[in-house]
Image (cartoon, rainbow, N blue to C red; front, side, top):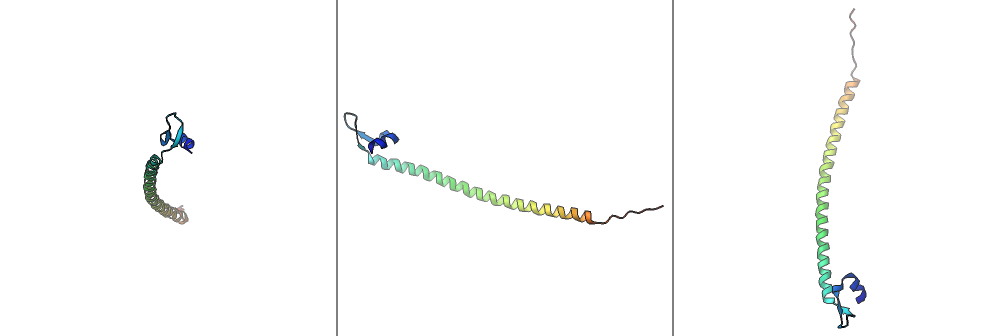
Length: 93
């Protein structure tokens, strides 16, 4: 086990006087795990805040798109009305 831990973080193992691996420094592992947890927790909080901001922006953009669609529909209806109006041509001799 100590060999595997050493590959990840050499500071987490204890060696004897001859330099041979003796054991894992479990008290240091707990501190390291807590530190890593806190880092990841901070990342999660940041991602959650970003997601909330993006949701707000999506709502704003959706409302803008709906408004533009309504304006396009209004202009299209006006164009159709003008096309449908009969044109009278006077022919005066």
